[in-house]
Amino acid sequence: MKSTSPPMPPTASLTVAAAAVALLASLVTTPAWAQTGSSAAPLASRPQVFSGKVLRVTDGDTLVVENQGRAVTVRLRGIDAPQLSQPYGAEARKQLYGAVFGKTVRVEGSRRDRATGFLLADVFVLSEDTPQKAGPLVPPRTHDPTGTRPDLPKGLPGPRGDLPRRTLARDLNVGQEMVRAGLAWADVRSVPRDKALADLQAEARGAKRGLWATARPTPPWQFRPTSR
Image 1: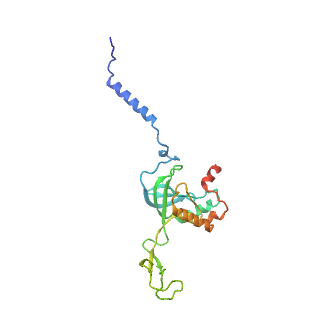
Image 2: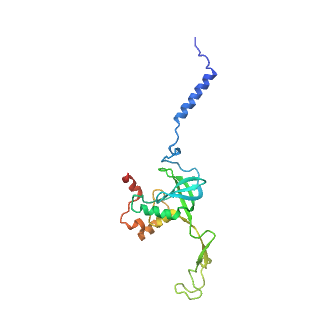
Image 3: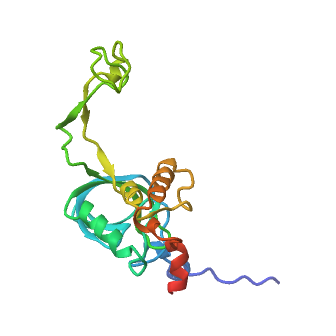
């Protein structure tokens, strides 16, 4: 004769279900990037574009920007400045500080640095002219109808784009300006196809600006392991 166990009371069923839920919750850990102060971070779910005042400059490629009452740490995308303990590290921080501290900048980023959790972004600051203010007149560059300019061939002016016109002020890409000044490397590991940064680095290197004045400067990504 086959024995059957008595049905489980409803309260006991609820107790078992609650225990199962608790066990499952204990097995699910909070991702490292979601924890405060974590050094790892995922890709940002969507692009982040905002404007805010620069509150602090940590080094030559890291700054803190206010965004709706929150302090957001931003790492300049595509560049790597010397560590503060490296040659030109202090100069790089001073350059970045002078360019952005206390100013309102525009931040455009869509990824986070996996080592630090900082937002990787392009940072733009207004040039000396405001967007509403026109720049100086640009003279014709191709032809001289008056025959008074020996540096230009005589004849009618060129296309409409070469006629005298006023330039408009543009935002400056802070990361690009750091590379142009020879105070940061174009980080080929993260932006291998960024031709603008590669060209600016070649220009700074050819002119021996900043860190390129030294014979064999050590990139920060090679210096960090040895410094530890």
